[in-house]
Image (tube, rainbow, N blue to C red):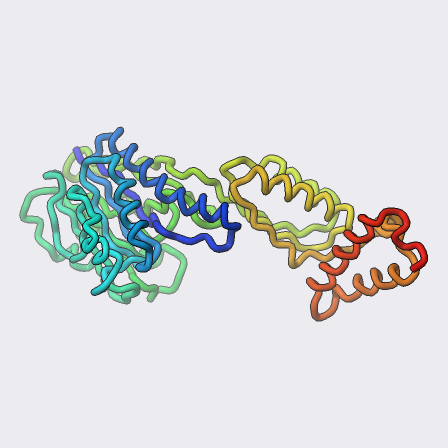
Length: 374
C-alpha cells in the first residue's frame, strides 16, 4: 500500500498588507505553524511521503531567516518530503531554491525536484515531477508523463503546479496549463496538483489539495491537506481531506436599507471568534443611530476576532429627523448638515459622508447645547 500526504501552496513568507500590523504578523506566523501541523499528521499516519505541489514560498525574495524557519518547521516528520517549485517560487537560474542550497538549509530527507525527471520515492512509487522553471509557461509541462516508460515496475505518481484546462475558471490558454486527462493518459496512480488554493477533485486520480492555511476570502474548501491511500496496483486512490487550517476567512457583502439589515451585521460581529478573519462590505443607506450601532459592534469585533476588514465606502448616511433632533441642530449648523446630505449625491460622496460623521461626533460631544446660537 502507498500512503501519502498531499499539500500545496504554502506561500511561506506571504505579507498580509491589507491587515493591521499585529493581525498581519499572526497570519504570517500561521503559515509556519500549519507546516508543523502537517509534519505531525504525516508522522501520526505513517505516510510514505509528503508531496508539496508547488508555491512552497510566496516569493523569490523571502529572507534567509524565512527559508531556514520553513525547513525547521518540517522537522516533525522524519520521512520523505517532496517539493516542487511553482509559479511563485519557480526554479530560475537564481532563485529562492539556489539560496536555500547556498545557506545549506535543506535537510537530507527533503527531495527537491528542480528537473523533469523520474525518481523513486521510499521504494514505493516512481515520482514524475513537473517543476516550473519560469513563472509562466504556455506549454503543458506534464506532457512527458505519458511518454516515459515505467520500467522499474513501481506505480507512478505525478506532481505538478498549474491550471487544469477546461475545469478551472480562466481562459483555455491560461498560464501553466495541465491536460484534464493527464492521469489517465499517463497511467498514473495519482496526480497531485497545486495552484488552485482550495481542495478540488478533477477525477478519481487527480486532485488539488489547496493551501493548508486559508489565505483569501473565497469559499473553496481551503485549509486542508489530502491523505491519499492506494491499496494496490490499479486501485482507485482513497482520498481523505484532513483539516489543517487555524483561521476561518469569512466575507460578507450587505446592502442596507432597513434597520434589520444593521442587526444582521451586528449579530455577525457579536458571534465573531478568536480564529475568524472577517471582511465586511456594506452599501446602501443608514441613519446616524444605526451607524453608531454598527461602529460600536465593529469595535467589539476587532477586539475578539483575529482580524476585521471593514469597507463602508459605498454606504450613504441618511440622518433621520430623530437623528437631527438628537443632535439638537438648528440654524447654520443645521443648514450645513442638510447640504452635506445633498452632496452625498455629488462627485465625492465619501468625503461628504465622512464630514457628516465628523460633524455628528462634534455635536454629540458638545451635548444638548450644540446648535444653540448658531
